[in-house]
Length: 117
Image (cartoon, rainbow, N blue to C red):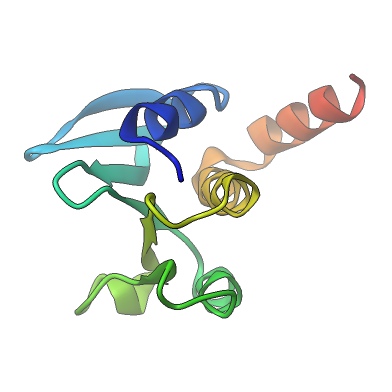
Protein backbone atom coordinates (compact mmCIF):
# COMPACT_ATOMS: atom_id res chain seq x y z
CA UNK A 1 0.00 0.00 0.00
CA UNK A 2 1.14 3.50 -0.86
CA UNK A 3 -0.38 6.45 1.01
CA UNK A 4 -1.32 9.61 -0.86
CA UNK A 5 1.49 11.44 0.95
CA UNK A 6 4.02 8.72 0.01
CA UNK A 7 2.88 8.98 -3.62
CA UNK A 8 3.29 12.77 -3.49
CA UNK A 9 6.79 12.53 -2.02
CA UNK A 10 7.88 9.87 -4.53
CA UNK A 11 6.62 12.01 -7.38
CA UNK A 12 8.30 15.18 -6.12
CA UNK A 13 11.57 13.28 -5.69
CA UNK A 14 11.85 12.97 -9.47
CA UNK A 15 14.11 15.61 -11.04
CA UNK A 16 12.41 18.92 -11.79
CA UNK A 17 8.96 17.57 -10.87
CA UNK A 18 6.60 20.33 -9.77
CA UNK A 19 3.24 20.10 -8.02
CA UNK A 20 0.35 22.40 -8.83
CA UNK A 21 -3.45 22.25 -8.94
CA UNK A 22 -5.04 21.07 -12.16
CA UNK A 23 -8.72 21.78 -11.75
CA UNK A 24 -9.33 20.24 -8.31
CA UNK A 25 -6.50 17.67 -8.37
CA UNK A 26 -2.87 17.73 -7.24
CA UNK A 27 -0.97 17.43 -10.52
CA UNK A 28 2.70 16.90 -11.25
CA UNK A 29 4.59 18.08 -14.27
CA UNK A 30 8.05 18.21 -15.74
CA UNK A 31 8.94 20.43 -18.69
CA UNK A 32 5.48 22.04 -18.31
CA UNK A 33 3.73 18.74 -19.11
CA UNK A 34 1.60 16.70 -16.72
CA UNK A 35 2.83 13.18 -16.04
CA UNK A 36 0.73 12.33 -12.97
CA UNK A 37 -2.25 13.41 -10.88
CA UNK A 38 -3.50 12.24 -7.50
CA UNK A 39 -7.18 11.42 -7.01
CA UNK A 40 -7.25 11.68 -3.22
CA UNK A 41 -10.93 10.74 -2.92
CA UNK A 42 -10.26 7.33 -4.53
CA UNK A 43 -6.67 6.75 -3.38
CA UNK A 44 -5.69 6.54 -7.05
CA UNK A 45 -2.84 8.07 -8.98
CA UNK A 46 -3.12 8.70 -12.70
CA UNK A 47 0.09 8.34 -14.69
CA UNK A 48 0.51 9.23 -18.35
CA UNK A 49 2.01 6.26 -20.18
CA UNK A 50 2.55 5.38 -23.81
CA UNK A 51 0.02 2.85 -25.06
CA UNK A 52 2.70 0.17 -25.11
CA UNK A 53 3.77 0.95 -21.54
CA UNK A 54 0.13 1.02 -20.47
CA UNK A 55 -0.41 -2.43 -21.95
CA UNK A 56 2.65 -3.82 -20.16
CA UNK A 57 1.81 -2.36 -16.74
CA UNK A 58 -1.87 -3.30 -16.97
CA UNK A 59 -0.90 -6.90 -17.75
CA UNK A 60 0.45 -7.32 -14.20
CA UNK A 61 -2.97 -6.96 -12.56
CA UNK A 62 -5.90 -5.07 -14.07
CA UNK A 63 -7.38 -4.58 -10.61
CA UNK A 64 -4.35 -2.54 -9.56
CA UNK A 65 -3.25 -0.73 -12.74
CA UNK A 66 -5.83 -0.05 -15.44
CA UNK A 67 -6.67 2.47 -18.18
CA UNK A 68 -8.68 5.52 -17.11
CA UNK A 69 -12.24 4.92 -18.35
CA UNK A 70 -13.16 6.70 -21.57
CA UNK A 71 -11.07 8.60 -24.06
CA UNK A 72 -8.19 9.54 -21.77
CA UNK A 73 -7.47 5.87 -21.13
CA UNK A 74 -7.26 5.23 -24.87
CA UNK A 75 -4.44 7.79 -24.96
CA UNK A 76 -2.35 6.27 -22.17
CA UNK A 77 -3.83 7.77 -19.01
CA UNK A 78 -3.61 4.97 -16.47
CA UNK A 79 -4.94 4.65 -12.91
CA UNK A 80 -2.92 3.03 -10.13
CA UNK A 81 -4.83 1.88 -7.05
CA UNK A 82 -2.57 3.12 -4.25
CA UNK A 83 -4.26 0.84 -1.69
CA UNK A 84 -3.29 -2.30 -3.61
CA UNK A 85 -0.09 -1.56 -5.54
CA UNK A 86 3.31 -2.79 -4.40
CA UNK A 87 5.99 -0.15 -3.98
CA UNK A 88 8.28 -1.39 -6.78
CA UNK A 89 5.48 -1.57 -9.34
CA UNK A 90 4.31 1.92 -8.33
CA UNK A 91 7.81 3.38 -8.66
CA UNK A 92 8.36 1.72 -12.05
CA UNK A 93 5.09 3.06 -13.49
CA UNK A 94 5.67 6.54 -12.04
CA UNK A 95 9.24 6.72 -13.34
CA UNK A 96 8.10 5.54 -16.77
CA UNK A 97 5.46 8.30 -16.86
CA UNK A 98 8.08 10.87 -15.84
CA UNK A 99 10.48 9.64 -18.55
CA UNK A 100 7.76 9.97 -21.19
CA UNK A 101 7.58 13.75 -20.69
CA UNK A 102 10.95 14.72 -19.19
CA UNK A 103 12.89 14.88 -22.45
CA UNK A 104 16.03 13.01 -23.47
CA UNK A 105 18.60 15.27 -21.78
CA UNK A 106 16.94 15.12 -18.38
CA UNK A 107 16.33 11.37 -18.69
CA UNK A 108 19.99 10.80 -19.59
CA UNK A 109 21.15 12.90 -16.64
CA UNK A 110 18.77 11.20 -14.21
CA UNK A 111 19.77 7.70 -15.19
CA UNK A 112 23.50 8.38 -15.46
CA UNK A 113 23.39 10.02 -11.98
CA UNK A 114 21.61 6.98 -10.56
CA UNK A 115 24.03 4.50 -12.09
CA UNK A 116 27.04 6.36 -10.71
CA UNK A 117 25.88 5.93 -7.09
